[in-house]
Image 1 (tube, rainbow, N blue to C red):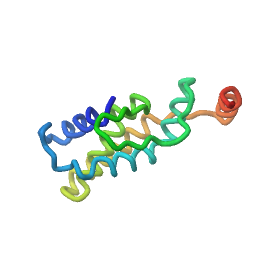
Image 2: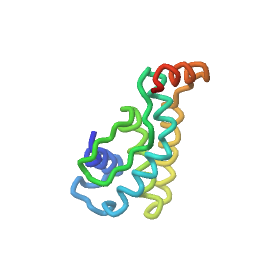
Image 3: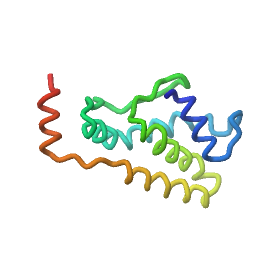
Image 4: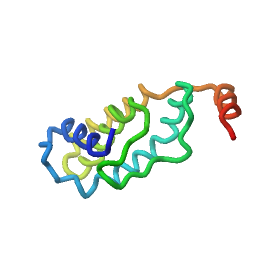
Length: 127
């Protein structure tokens, strides 16, 4: 999924028109902050699924940049977090709703991975 597609999903959640540009100036800063915040959780999800971990958080700067985090984060967690970030200055009641949904989605999608599995995966995939 691209940043532009994620942005459209986020605007739909907020009941913003697809053509709305009100949050354009805040998109990359808030999205990059979320990508750092969710980096370890996303890597745990990747280990849980037997995938290679990412070596560092994604950093995006263009609408056509690809987002390579796990689908549950791209399709659910990040759009909710982005909506909360956008609304914190506009509407504290809506912010509270989206922030609660974001944190609930994080908890629901977190994977518990044992230290043994992490160690085994790290040993198996290290170069």
